Length: 109
Image (cartoon, rainbow, N blue to C red; front, side, top):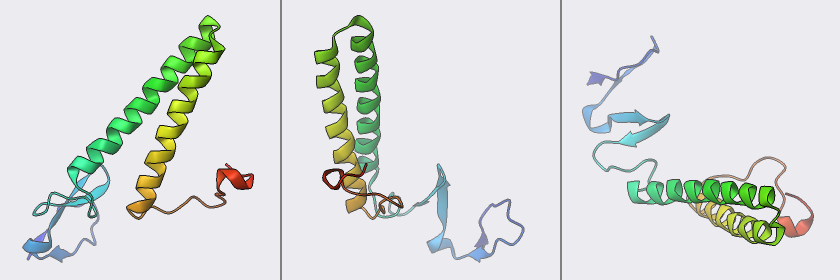
């Protein structure tokens, strides 16, 4: 048994084979290289999607500023689709829908 480093004075010893590392506020198993059953590759894919959504938003803002509203609308739709795909992938991995969430076609968010 070993003690996991923690600022919690009530932290209990943990068997070495069950030891985990906190990575960005999430527990990661050292042996498996997975975070809650999600591979680093999948996490990287999600991170890339977030960056692409952010970049598309930057492009939308530029197009609006230059008066190209049709192009801004096209970029906005691309960002919306990418965000929707990411949302659904997260749900497939076990995320839960936020409280009060309704599907877009039912008049909600």
